[in-house]
Structures are given as structure tokens and as C-alpha cells.
Amino acid sequence: MKNKAIRRIIHVFTGISIILLIVYNILNTRLLFYFLLVSIILSLLSIKIKIPVIHKLVLMYKKEKEMPPGRGFLFFILGSLLVLKLFPQDIALASIAILTFADPASHLFGSLLGKFKIIDNNKHVEGTILGILIGTLSALFFVNFIEAFLACSIAMLAEYLEFRVANNTIDDNLIIPLIAGTVIYLLRLWV
Image (cartoon, one colour):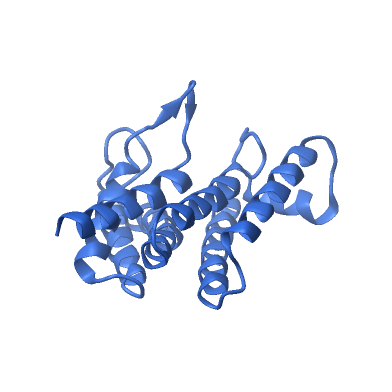
């Protein structure tokens, strides 16, 4: 339980940091790409070498038997980088905000308040609804209500689908921002 809480805190801190650094023109896609590369190298090195601070962070953030260590964090950075490259900045920032707040909120509220499970996984209807609400509110800083609500709703519902490539499940930290960004982009094209 403690590790799950720490993972959620790191998740939110990472997202807020990326958003603020981009808004204040401190971070760009090139720097984020280099950060991703360094993170991948450190993750792979941490399998064999106990790098002092990195090892402690990996132990806190890592899910059981997760390979490479910090896989969720790496996909968070990759998802953020991809939406920043694919979409206009306001759409990208809304997508990162949805990932930052809706995903951990749905897990937190679902585990605390959840009574109705969806399908066979550990996700609850109550958590998803509150995650959509919080994700929509966070995306409103960058896009209008309809875009925020539809993007968050569809992205959170897509989280229930299992996307696989070569027998590996694609992490929701990649799926959520890409779907949210695509929804907003398509809304703007069609409406």
C-alpha cells in the first residue's frame, strides 16, 4: 500500500513538473527526449548496479516483477513526449494533465470508495467517474469543457482495454495521453 501511494505521488509530481516546465519554456521536447534516454539507461543499469538515489526511487516506484525497473515512469515520459510532438501545445498539455490527475485519482478513489468492479480487473466504476471529473477539471486549464470532458472520458474508458504488442501490454501511461490528445484533435477537425 505504501509503494502504491509513493507511485501515485511520483506520478502526480512528474506530471505537474512537466506541465510547469513546458508552460514556462524551461523544458522542450529535445530536453524531454534526453531525459527519457538518461532515464532508460539508469533503469537498465539499476538492474545490475545499485545506483544510490536511483535504486531507492526504483524500489519505491517499481511494481512487482516490472521490467525494466520504473517502466511506468518511462512510459509516462514517453507518452508526454509523444503528445508534445504530435499535437499543438494546448492539446498536449491537456493530455498530460489528464494523465497526471485522472489516472491516479481513479485508482485512489476506486480503492477507497469502490463497490462496483468493472470487468475482472481492480478498477471500480466510482474511481473511474471521479477520475474523469478530476481529469476534466485539470484539462480545463488548457482546453474547453467539451474537449476536456470527452478526451478524459474516452481515455479513461480506453484504460480498461488491454493493448498488446508482441505479447507485452502497453502501459496506460502511454495510452491515456495519446487517446486524450487524439480525441481533442479530432474534435477540432470535425467541429
